[in-house]
Structures are given as structure tokens and as C-alpha cells.
Length: 218
Image 1 (cartoon, rainbow, N blue to C red):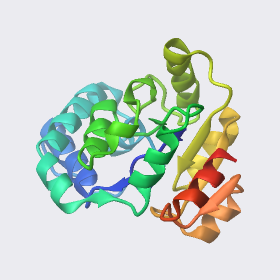
Image 2 (spheres, rainbow, N blue to C red):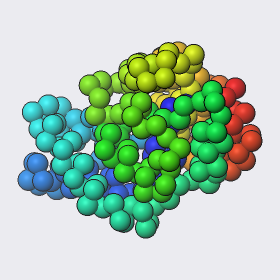
Image 3 (cartoon, rainbow, N blue to C red):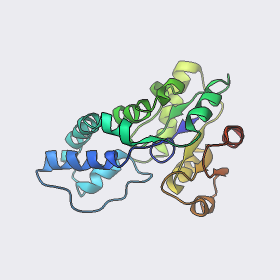
């Protein structure tokens, strides 16, 4: 089970965006004043959009992004939160002997770990076998193969993969990677928009644990 982070498992009260703006200003030397899309994109893609395609500054922006979010750790924990039913659903899946819970997220690995650990969700996640925006691919669907390879090395080859996310881009990534797609409308996209992207299942949220597990496991 490969979980998106922002909008699916947790909200961080805007601190992910603020960290990006801080990182940009630190590297470029001026405030970021434009708008770029964040939802469903990798940190690498977001940073390149902010930098207008300048790959030269990319490594430092991503390094500063990690430092900036670490500096906001306490505010993330105090002002953000896990969405309804997330702890219960993760715990129920973790208790099964046929499921590995991990992450597939556009966040760089350190920031993904910070966001889920801020709300105690890491106890049900094997972060080691996930795939992240710091991995050497810009397209989200390419991260699925990375996660499967990591899971295979640790557990043996998985029989299948499920992506759970909150945007049509998550659904598209699952489709392009040959994975099951489950959309949850707790984040950046409405239920109708998610249904139009044709996932295998759509949930308004994860508050009904049994229904969520059935939808996710198919």
C-alpha cells in the first residue's frame, strides 16, 4: 500500500509551502512571488517550476527545503493533523499479514518522514521501502517501480501495488504504473473530480475503517 502524504494522510497547515518559499529565498536571494501548482507533483518538479527550469540551483533548493521544514517541525505538529480515520485505517492494514504500508509521495524523503512522524503515523509505515521526490525521477508513476524494488529486496516480490492519493495525478500515476488506484477526497480534489479520473475506488475520507480497508484492498 503506497500512500500519498499531503492531502491524503495529513495536512500541515501550509508549512510545506512556507518551507519551499524559505528555501527559494535562501538560495536565490529574493522572495518567491509567483504561483506554482503543488498538488500531485514531486518536490523536484515544484522546485524546478519555481526556478524556471534552472537545474543548477535544484540540489541546493532541495537541501534547504529539508532544513526549512525541520525548522517548522513543532508548528507542523501543533497546527496540522492527520485526517479522520487515518490512524485507524493504517493500523488495520498494518495488522494484516498480506499488507506492507509505505509511502509514495512527491515529498523528499526526509520531509515525508517528518510529516507522518509529527502525528505518530510512522509506527504503521515502513518508510524504508517507499519512494520519494528525492529519488532520481521527476514523474510520479516512475516512483512505483522504485518502491516495488525496495519492497522486493526486504520482503520478496510484492504481488501487487495500491496507490492511495487525493488528486487525479495520483490516479494517473497508478494507472501508468499498473497499480490499483484509490482516491480519497480529503485533500485538493473534490469527489466528482476524482471520480472523473476513473480510479478503482473513491472515498470521501477514511473515517469508516472497514469500508476504507475494503476499498483499498479491493
